Amino acid sequence: MILHNQELLLELRIKIKNQLSFINKEIKDLPFDTLKFRPAKGKWSILDCIEHLNLTFDIYLPRVKAAVDSANKKSNNYSSGFFGDRMVTAMEPIKNTINNPMQTFRNMNPERSKRDPRTTIVQFYQYMEALEEQLLKSEDLDLGRPKVKSAIGLILRFKLGDCYRFLLAHSERHLLQCRKIMRVLATYQ
Image (cartoon, rainbow, N blue to C red; front, side, top):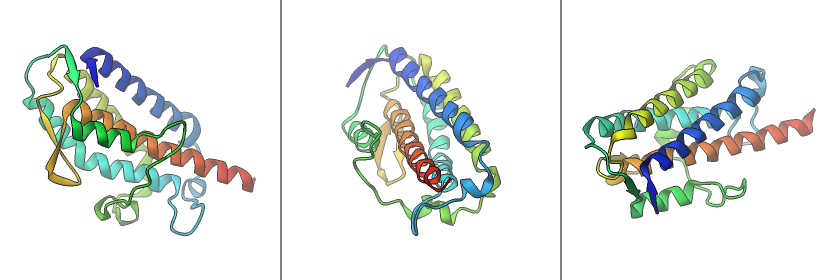
């Protein structure tokens, strides 16, 4: 996939705005008990989904910042890498469906988190704002040169542009999961 840098960054910033809008309109004012509701044994709650995203950002944001700080000046076009493109494709929901179920790594399991659940949504906002800040800093950078180490193995590395795409596809996936939980909740009301 080849995109103009500005086109890619604009698309990613729109995704951040849409995801934060969903949280703001649909989730942030829900009662705490509703946020903790698990639709079935072994399934995640809305808070679990968002905390999982926070745990992912705990790992990736420092790596993204380091990549942005080390990046060279701009190249106008961005070409996705093989690994990054495959990871984004596997992660992205298609037509509001999660097609590739994946096992969560232990260190990203929200049940293992030590963070206060009452701060989960606020932390997510902060991480998304920090990600958008990195996108803004990336406007004049070559998104294909700097590499970001993957959480699944240090030998696997994303191009910076692919890492941005992956993180937002991952967020979209789990926000879709939140929407499904909300539909289950609606059947109880």
